[in-house]
Image 1: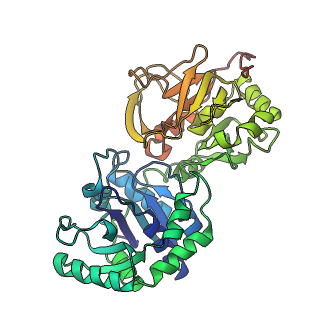
Image 2: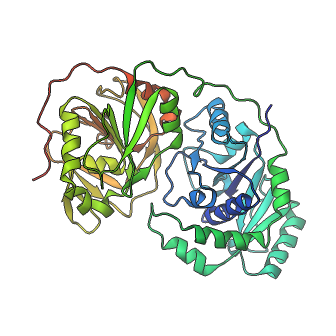
Length: 446
């Protein structure tokens, strides 16, 4: 058993979100000198990473649908290796409307986490309270004042017998400022500081920290990070700038554990790829906001085409897929030419549905995996690919044919895949490829 302070924080109300009160809690814990790591309870990239603004650390992910209990424990311990606290945010099953994929309740059982339930008091009716939640403590959201917090605290503690350890007021201006943030935009630290100020007035931080430290964790195995480095060197060029900055940190950590060298570059600002790059990784982001700048960086689009024409590999997901296409159509219907590695038009849908968990089998081989290999992830429906030529889908399931496509040595996925949950795919990054005939067939849209 090892000491690892940890808390699960989630809502039991279907239309409520624990996001703001979670940011406020992280901010207050950080002020008290606690190194705190935020985890999401599903492997979906969040549209607003307020945890980064509060803690200085990017959010990490646990997922009971994608991971075993042992891998969850290992990733939890790995993410808090500096000796701090973990806060795992999500929705309890009682607050989900037919949500599938990872379960916060299952994670609590696997990781023996103390449970905090966030209760939005504006959604409560005093005579029709929800069923008593199976949690250790409550946090109240959107209280009108200190007296309103006392009213609800007395009411809930007497009826449910669960202590209230903190509250956040309605703060309409701050909530409006959060709502106005574009998905993917950096959350200003000043905004998170103001949320922390509001939470600190009503919080029993000492009691929260004692609750977090009340249960030791069984020592995890070294299933992932105990691997020996791969003897074959691999240099991965990672796209990272304003347009591409959404990745799973555990994927990068595991690549480095396996012996890869990661070098970042900017498709927006750089003129060439990092020297010696074996594989280019184009992650998720918002290329639709920078389509003109990406299209005008002719040197970088040429460098990517030359990389592929020389028989080297590219992996892309989400917004990276759109960048590889012949052209990109934004929400206003404007087209911009992109790299041209995929014979397709990428159409952006700002009103897309939330990410949904899918499990599909590869129907065609690629350097990522052989026929029959099963792929698990969350479908990102913000981008829809329309073939503009012979687009080679790697899945055969109806309606999912273009969720992953391959062209030359580019593999592009509309699924968000945390490779730490499926490390066999990362092993394929290191596998030597058969020599490829140089090709000049990669062309941009006219």
